Each structure stands twice: as structure tokens, then as C-alpha cells.
Image 1 (tube, rainbow, N blue to C red):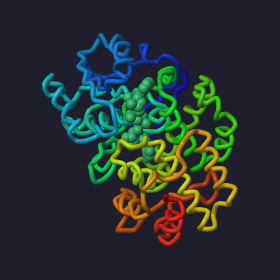
Image 2 (image 1 turned 180 degrees about the vertical axis):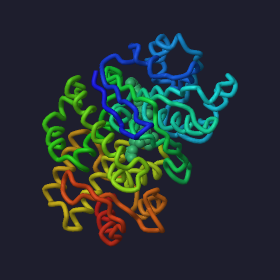
Image 3 (image 1 turned 60 degrees about the vertical axis):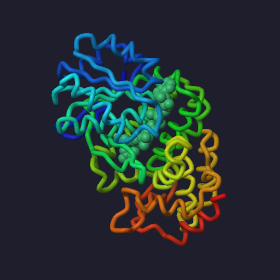
Image 4 (image 1 turned 180 degrees about the horizontal axis):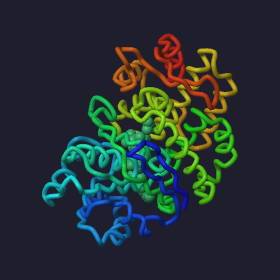
Length: 358
Ligand code: NAD
Ligand code: GLY
């Protein structure tokens, strides 16, 4: 097992990465109180709930099984969690455990941030995307029909338990969505890692255990370092949103159920590369390289059919990164060197969207 730390002073917490961690004593040892509210969704619960529960017999445990899907990441679903916690008379010493992908993790994290003004929560991420990104860093929240992740809070978990064996049951399309976030780390800050991904992409897609563990570890290391420098996204953390401003627009346009988050991010990273190229930053071959790695990871590289430049601009206008009406974008000086463009060049953006939308 490997352990990394997210260094945040008194809120520092470990990320444990290893095999069969959901069967180990580690699970019980990181929980501080006696009460546990274990939240999962119907898909993940049918595969892993019993194994996790068998390690929690020393606690007073209640479970909430949510319907599966991004379209349930909303305020209504939160009520299921609060109602169960209140029905069981759980105190603020309860630990909320998120067993699932990023959707479950984000919802449970927000429930933990707000239930009785804040409880402990533990992340057991079960998708590649959640293992390399969403379980680390304390961004929690739900969607509003007018914008993705618009209702939320920063609330760090007490620990993240990454069981890499749990990915064995993850469908191929979800693996690709997770690879989008792995590729993101290479594009935003580590071109050597990008080359390593290119060299090992087939093994990653095939879930080669040692290659997968290395990708997860490196991604978590990069994310932990960025979060430790800028927990609340006043600066460098914004780079983690490479491809996300475009991606969130795509997700919102499709009503949060027409594509996977990682797929939208894949298209978003290609659009960010194209804008960077037209601005004279990235070379043509860098754009081709970005398109090629996303394509090889089975990610879409063009916006969904029928989505217009205007659809993009309308959704992008409500992005959380925007300040005082200016559209902020994460772009690249070069591959492996992303930056925050405080004022997106609207003419360039429009040209790129006109050329890519179909
Ligand atoms: P998800 O949670 O919807 O999971 C994807 C699918 O895989 C679901 O159907 C789920 O039931 C299934 N699944 C999960 N684990 C499985 C397993 N081991 N075996 C078989 N099936 C399994 O999607 P996701 O891609 O994990 O997360 C996307 C969400 O994460 C989005 O809502 C996004 O906004 C959020 N996100 C948050 C952050 C953050 O920092 N908080 C970062 C990135 C993404
Ligand atoms: N996924 C973006 C962040 O955690 O900041």
C-alpha cells in the first residue's frame, strides 16, 4: 500500500492506495466516532456494499442507497441522506462514508459539510475518475438545473481509501472518462507524464494493475500538491479545470445525462488546445498530439452534434471561475504548462467554436 498526504495543516489527511483495501482493517481504523452513515448507489452497492459493511460491524451503521446517475446529483437527493441521518438520530460525530464514483462522493461530501454544520466524511472512490480526481481536494456539491456544481462547499475528507481492484468491474466507457482526468494532469503540468501515458495507454485501457496504480498515484500526487498550495482555488488550483469550462457547458447542454463528465472534459481539453493554438501558443503538432491521445483513450474530440457556439457561450457565462462578467479559461502555453487566461479572447473563442461545432 502507498500513502500520500494532502498537507492542509490540522486538516491534513491521507490518501491510501492499494489492493483490496475495502477488505482491510484500515476502513474501521480511520473512522473516529461510533456512528457511520454509509452512502452508495444501487450499482456500486450491489457489487461492494456487503464487503464494506462486514468491516464496519464495530459501528452503529445506517445505509442510504441512491439512484445511479449524474441527473440525481441534486438537492432532492441530498434530502434522502439528511432524512436517514435524522431518522437514526445521528449526531454531528457521525462519519459519512461515500462508496461510489464522483457523483456519490460529491453528494455525500456536501451532505457531510452541511449536516449539523459539518461531520467527518470518508471517501472510498470506485471509478478511475474519482480515484484520480474527485475524491481528493474537498470540492463537494450538487448540480442546479441552471448550472453544474453550483451548490456546494469545500469540505475535506478525513481520508481517501483507493482500492485499485475495485476498478475491475468498471465499464470500459467509464475507464475512458477517468483517463480524461489522468491525461489532464499531463497536459496541465507534466509533459513527461503525458509521454508516459502515451506509452502506456493500451495497458491503462486494459487495466494492467501495476500501470494503473502508477497512473493513480502520480495523478493523486499532482492533485495533492496543488490542493496543498491552494485549497480554495484562489490561484493554481484553477489549472485543474483544464477542459472543464467547455466540458461543463457540454454537460449542461445535454442535461447532465447525455455524456459522461470525463467525455465532456476530453472534448474540452481539445477545445482548450485549439484556442491556445489560434492564440499562437501551442503548435499545430501539439494540437494533433492532444487530439490523438484523447482519441486513443476513446474520448470524443468534437462537441456533441447540434450544439452551437451560442450554446457554449451561454453555459460558459455561468462558470464559477468567471469574475465580474469576464470569462476565464484555462489554456496552455505549451503541453504540460497550463495557465489561467483571465479574459478569454472572445473572437478567437468564437472562431474555434464555429470551426468545431457541427
Ligand atoms: P459516477 O459517479 O456517475 O460513476 C460512473 C458510473 O460507474 C456510475 O454508473 C456508477 O454507478 C458506476 N460505477 C462506479 N464504480 C463502479 C465500479 N467499481 N464498478 C462498476 N460500476 C461502477 O461518475 P464519475 O465519473 O465517477 O464522477 C463524475 C462526477 O464527479 C461528476 O458529477 C463530476 O462533476 C464530479 N467531479 C468532481 C470533482 C471534485 O473535485 N469534486 C472532480 C471531478 C469530477
Ligand atoms: N477537479 C477540480 C478540482 O478539484 O479543483
